[in-house]
Image 1 (cartoon, helix red, strand yellow):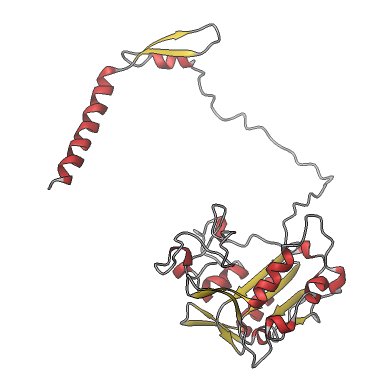
Image 2 (cartoon, rainbow, N blue to C red; image 1 turned 180 degrees about the horizontal axis):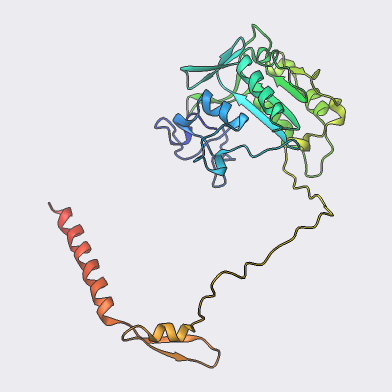
Length: 299
């Protein structure tokens, strides 16, 4: 979810790009960026519907959270907020109770196995104190009454490009290699309170495992697990469907007026003559469109 398209913002001096460092080496808005909800679509209602699966029937698969009771989910939220609320689009708010109730519905509907909830905003740790569903780890950037601060001020853009808590997480993961056995406890131990300038918090009483037993790759990564089954699935052939008559390509080509084909030794078909009546019609239409385009330039 991307509430504001900063890459195309008219005040962005680097159009079509987003950077988290003034050196502008890594473009976060590259060719492989995937944004499922943007702009006016980023609302509290759509966020709750996404989590609970209560989307409209015409919603495409890319805008659905297709999870089950074996799925681990990472939710990272950032923006402006306060005591038990986070702003959406600067005119709407989601409360800690809204998220807690959404997680409860997800658990009842078997939409997750474990959830890692992370939030970077002012007084972020107040957003998860109302959670009551099992198997949830919650982490925040600041205690009640504390602000969350930004980092890396870009003087060319005139804004800071990242927050300190988010930067701490990103900086840690840049050192993680594939196949790493680092745990959530390692991530928590890496936080520098003096650098973040607020008090990072974590809640683990709803989680059944210890942090030093929970690999980061269980949330910050993608795995495809295969399950073997001994059940036999019977497939019935559909013999009642009418068969289509097989017509060779040469026969179909020769059925068109003015088309002559020749078959070479390697069984490729070569078209020697085309339907000039059809080509003349297409050429006339193209000439008319071209003439109209030229005419419109001078009118």
